[in-house]
Amino acid sequence: MPSRMLIVDDHALLRMAIRSMLTLDGDLEVVGEAGDGEEALALCRQLRPELVLMDVSMPKMCGIEATRAIKAECPKIGVLMLTAHTDHELLLEAVRAGAAGYVLKSVDPDELVGAVRRTLEGESPVDQELVMRLVRSLAEEAGSTDRTAGAPPPLTPREHEVLRHLAGGKTNRRISEDLHVSLSTVKRHIERIVSKLDVSDRTQAAVKAVELGLIDPERTK
Image 1: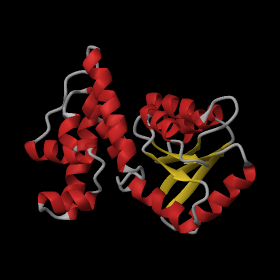
Image 2: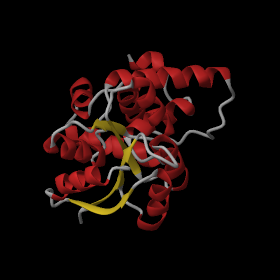
Image 3: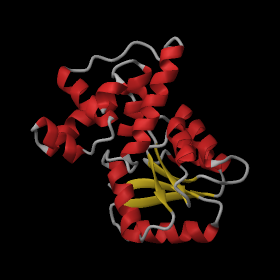
Image 4: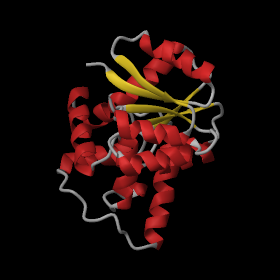
């Protein structure tokens, strides 16, 4: 079955262009469009897409607020941010809100479809520097406050090891090389980690791992 997508942007022409790019791939299906964050939240409740392509700047409810609301109600729905600029502080806030990563509006169709596919397959399109900044920032916050995220799930020693590499911003291929295991084995471990942590993607797995105290950010370097 095709992966179900929701496009959210306040410019109708851009939504039309993105829809055209995505529907060229038979494995992707656009099930809805929204022009603002409030409409996106309502459609997520109704349609339950697998992935939302979410514009950052919109009226009524911005993309970051909408992402936070969607993840609160529908945590398994992935969110990929659409942005015109690589403002790392803004993107850091988006990942904190629950986004899996981001893609620039200026990319060509192949790059957009590739970013969507990577997100759906667990390879979140977000650079290593951003992940590391997020992990360290969350660790500092967790160190100054009592953790309230609940008891950590039972991960195997290998899953802990994969999680540490994942939180360091490494790709599946790099983890495979570092641990001397197959790429498919790494993917299976990450799928189990994401499931056990009850999140939608690898980026949010790193976020929750820090919140739960499962990893030491200094060991992810």
